[in-house]
Length: 79
Image 1 (tube, one colour):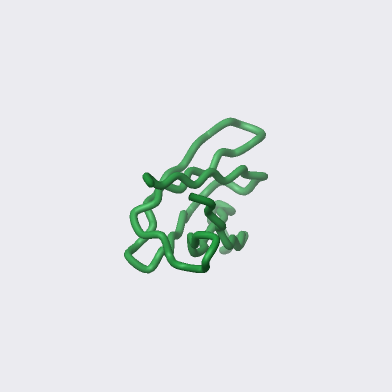
Image 2: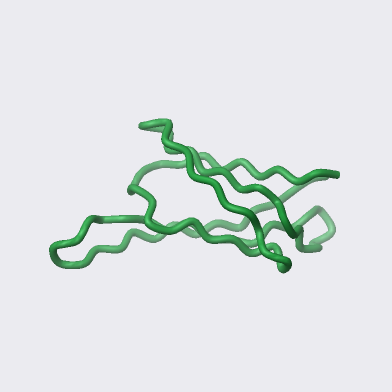
């Protein structure tokens, strides 16, 4: 199954708070159909810290409060 993830990365800053990022998107197959229950893993390329979530029934996912950095995204779904 070929998967496409649409990503957005936002850095948020509040006075006196840590700077964090959010990665969100929708997992779809080659035909444009949403993929539910896909595993999304974001790995920080500088620290190798890894964060994981699962897509919703609509294929949507969000990873919040990530340390700001460069990430590689891996999406896996059975089938």
